[in-house]
Length: 161
Image (cartoon, rainbow, N blue to C red; front, side, top):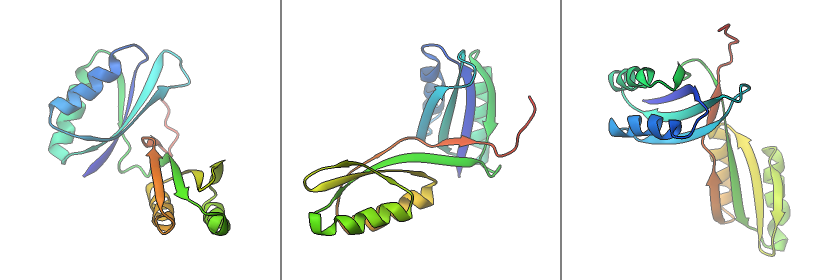
């Protein structure tokens, strides 16, 4: 099962390496990873998507709690969290077919961020199903390149700390 793990850590060199190293040493692949500072500049949030069964996932979180630089771990898997990802698509776009590609981008509320002689680069944000739908439609035109960020996720509930 895929787990969405949100880890609040110290914003210091080496912390990300310790967190990811702990997960990988246990034999688990991190399918998506995103890290950035929080509203508190001394803290960062690591969002990782890890595929593991319940027992293994529990072991990962117990080990993470033992790390000195880890302050809080949240499992956003079953919380109905808000998840987003950013994708850049570079799509083959001959002049006579550009309007079709632009229409698809508009339907998905995506932006054209670069226009080349034979391609368009489209920026899109959204959940996994939206981005997969765009990718499927753009494949008909020929995708030259796809670049994806890691997922970010936030709980919908406003919990008091």
